[in-house]
Image (tube, rainbow, N blue to C red; front, top):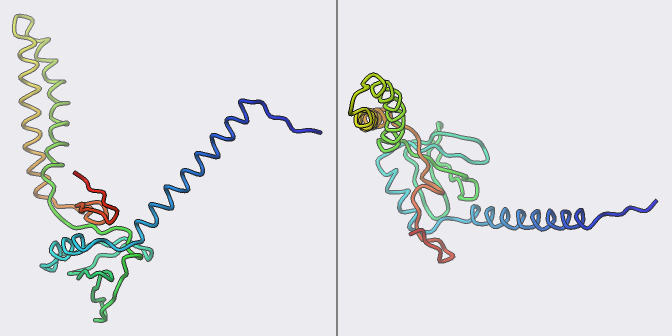
Length: 183
């Protein structure tokens, strides 16, 4: 029995092979870039960020752990474990580092969106209730006012309740070793 494929099937198989090869290349580049140590500016930024004994949440091959007052060097991150022993975690073992901080901008955006949604509903009801002139003006005014109120409340809530945000590898960017810069 002879196996035959149509031209369309052959084209599909070749396309999937090329796609698979590109995926492997991108994955390999990403893994190589991730495994390398960060440039000196990034190390200095992390050291300055955690200089006052602030906690860091470190994600690595061992899992996730919270570290009090880590110190960063070209070799990796140094911290003191619960027994008092200084531990060095190399950069190749670190997948991500998070810092704790307030996020008023995120709160304002979420609050503004929620406020706009509520304003659309309230503005629609107000425009229908006011069958005379000014229905559209009422609608636009209520949506704008509720959006601003929601953004203000969201900013206050975002400032009050700090959360974790990523600072390494993608938080604050510095020029890479390959000459690529985020502008």
